[in-house]
Image (tube, rainbow, N blue to C red; front, side, top):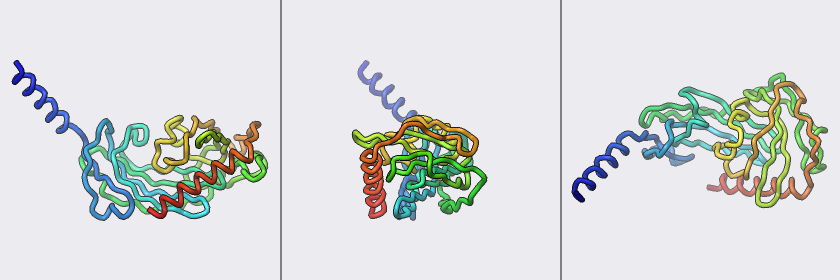
Length: 222
């Protein structure tokens, strides 16, 4: 009986591993000859070229397994986020066959579009005085709470519709990882539709931005 149980367990383990998706897995300089990773529950492979700007511009290349929330279908897509002091843009390509994420995408160069959105100025704790000219795939205005440690601040600006669609899963997206806990955003489609009534505290905003700067510089050094 014990031999039968062990045999069935081995067959199940082998069949489970055989059915799992394999994706190339690397980051930045490691992507010259990337190893293959066995995905767990992810159903897609992704290759992404990301640029995060906060005082300095940090380019990132990422290849890995991706959940359906980030890659709902195969093909290319662009993510874009602009909160004035903090900007992030990404080109992603999703695929669903073993080790299909071989391509390294060019970094996005978004051009201004017709949408304008309010943004928050952390130096004066005012969210309706500054306006942003949105770029590229940014076709929504947004406002969102970002928490790092015990500090929560309100951010607003321009975003692409697919970022809004991710809802409360924004923190898991590679281009926004490390920026704290991000709440479900409130998004709208017309210029200057994201006016806010809540005023963030100076200490909260500045502590948050300092945390983002430290993370960005550490990533750049790595």
